Length: 203
Image (cartoon, rainbow, N blue to C red; front, top):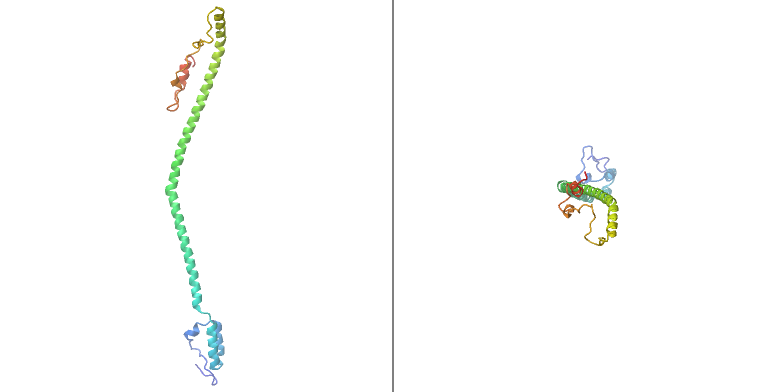
């Protein structure tokens, strides 16, 4: 410190500020430097005012710490959510997808059986239509002969067979056994044998 004109000492070029002065903001420090030429009471008052106006770093540090703590909590929640999503994804890839693949394979087998059943139903419908056509043709072929036979029997005085339950159509093939139309045990592979037994002359 160098006295200037008997006044208050001024800080020299090599003078270092004390610890309390380093904590002051630039405005308060500038105020102290400008008031260095004033008397001691004025300087002390200016110093106290500067210390009063200087914000306490503890409050700001506490606010920053609270902000950082909140961000860390949010980051922890995000990490836990990410871990949960990762575990769910692993479960889907390891358990659910193989189960879905097995179900898809099973459904494909069911679809194949349904297609086979549809083909069998179409084949049965085709053969039923074929039988109906042959029955109609047989009725047309033998209908005139049966009517003539009835007239002849009626004119000869023989009892009428019209209401006799034992009357059978002449020339008609015997009905096929019922076991040929059984559907138990799945579709019969040799459906053509049925028509060969009913109509031996049909190719």
